[in-house]
Length: 184
Image (cartoon, rainbow, N blue to C red; front, side, top):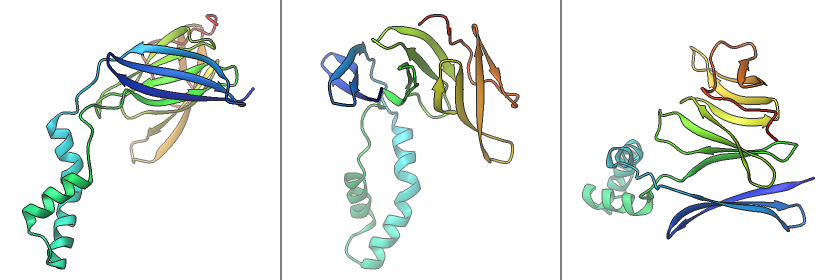
């Protein structure tokens, strides 16, 4: 069964809506979850702009059309940063129809991941360590990209046995928590 997952945010009141669609476009199920918007601090916004600002200013100064201050204002206007972090970082769907919804967090912070059963019931909550990106999951496996000591990306598979995540060939742990494979 082919399915598509969509998420969106509503501002009043703040909620995240998850909609799972069948391949023909019919809605399989929808769930609405309260959201507490996470403001993006000014220092983080400045870091987004700060890395790119000098090269932009040099470019426009070579063109001779804008002053450095005007270039800074033009750049900030053309590269908007939203006031709040997007609530959902990623969504993966398993072959049995479960969703793995990874909530956003500030850079360098762990994120919560929810396992949601077909129909929208929350099955488990897992903490994903900072620096790991979940790329896929199945009922008894989770795969994540990690970086080794040399900065090389490595895909690591974790087995799920009862309430414990077991690393396969790697010594770090993706989560403090569990996926209970008996719950769905």
